[in-house]
Image 1 (cartoon, rainbow, N blue to C red):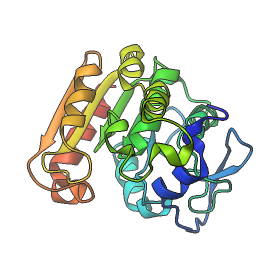
Image 2: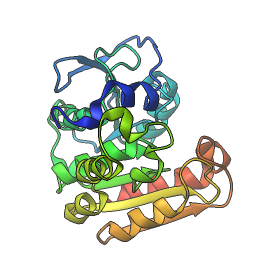
Image 3: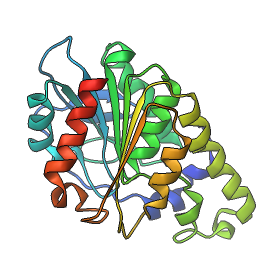
Length: 251
């Protein structure tokens, strides 16, 4: 997505909230722009399934350690926590469209067969997980939590098109071209699990329903009655983990 208007500095500054954080043993991946991404890799066995997790916007990989790594390792899976440009110890600057190009290098770093990969995206991370599923349609599974379908619905809350020197129609077209969830989910041949809170205050649960409608079978949609965008896991932890673990066993 080189030279995309969606990578304009105004967009990057208003839509991303990178925080510094230190990892004891970073798993370094070279991004498409040449910067180094400080990911984290927690293996259990070379032949095990590997979950690649793309976290939310105001988070960093360090927030998921050691808890998430321990959970997935207990479930028999390797876990790669993917970091974004400018987040944690990573170099570079966040870029809404440009970071799509980082997904394949992250996957390629593992040298794991596609059928043993499961992509997991939370919130803004759903954009990158879905893109990975489209780039590698034979990946075994895709999990989306609190994901966004139509990015244009919220985009203009923080950026006005005239600030970018474009019309609203031009920006919307760029968003739909880069983040065409229908097309991307339509080519993905693996299994899909979609999780969302009914009363998510940031991304309405209709986004989960849109994603579910666009995904191919086999697919599963779980809408939780408790929790919101940032506490869906903690308010529903037992059922959340049960659903994810059951899904992983079927991939």
